[in-house]
Length: 192
Image (cartoon, rainbow, N blue to C red; front, side, top):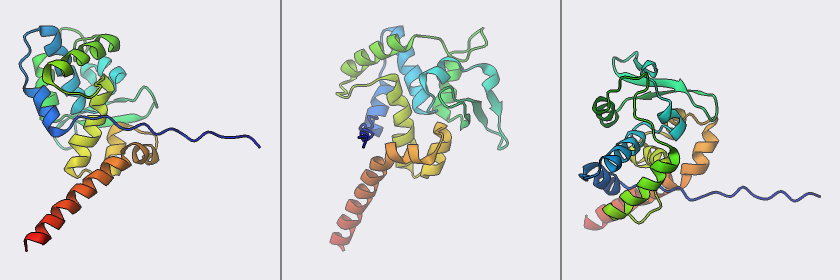
């Protein structure tokens, strides 16, 4: 009988709301760090992976059925179509980097972005290992799940091929949110 190893579930590293705000509000003196911060924050509010962000073209931003701007493109990893509403913070970053090319944002290598993110984490005092992919996890966790967006919507926005992938990664995040809410309830009950 063949032994099948169990799939290893990694812990999901994402920024808390406070950490996200620290990065958003920090004034960097070096333009390279400001750019990387902006690219990172853009993905914290869109959930785009590096390849999607790097290949985002102006024709991917459309007027949606609801009158709002949306990003519509294919997810490179799965080939699945994704539609993500353009939240205000992401729209601000697009406005900041109006380019003459067909691309929406300046291009940097993933390696360079991750190197500069390490520097940013040290400057701001965040002790987590932050990579570009942390932005995608932050979008799913801090921006969506912690604001009560249902798991199936999170799965759709991330372009996962199935909701079970989303549940595998973010189930613990939901458990923590449930725990936080129950602790608030216990405090409330104990006050009465």
